[in-house]
Length: 314
Image (tube, rainbow, N blue to C red; front, side, top):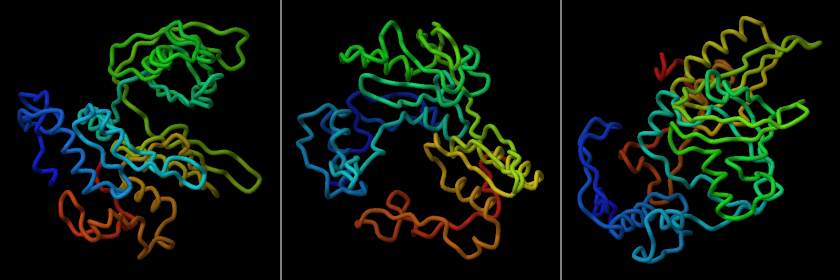
């Protein structure tokens, strides 16, 4: 049946005002089965590869376990999962991140170079004015231990749970202990960090590099979030004033975000000539929704290269 038949029927209904919308929670008394039926119907209607999802009995699973199963099991030619983006995100946390750039954590981007023993986890970059910055962490530091668990060699499930809890705190105010080996240091050191609501700086390290063919611009761009708009404009103006001949746009750690932000940046880099009359992106839904956006019902239209700001952070 349509997902609307099961909407807002919750096993544990919330009450009061939803801080994300300013309106009362719409929750009505329901059950795990009604939650799972909503997920099943929603997936069948909106999921891109809906016809590749194995239809399992929704009465046999917890809701979180059922959600994890509602995706394609197909792989790409390289053997990687076809669907790499199947996850849940608390609404209030998502809005805080996407609109204000606030996220609970230490202000450090971990890179897991090897996820199985012997593991290797290193620091990619640090957010300014964050717990990680106060602890003296820097790019290249390697983590050897978390909360008395050996990062490199531990292989029990309880050890993995401890590592995940330490690396990725669920909320602000959590305290965890790390053993790290800083770049160039003779010996590892032990430090303690408390997670906090960190305001991210999506555009960092804007600089120019002198070369024989002229100055090369560089910027690290980590998140297509609302606050990035003003920072990108400032960075591009700075590099334009430096008369750069080439640009290195470092998006190695960028998880994406607003398409409009990407369009704005693409126009600022390419300019009018190459982008005039061109489509920046065309969104395509599954075969059930070939011409309209399925949530709002609006007609699908190409996204152009934005020649002016969309007003995210100005």
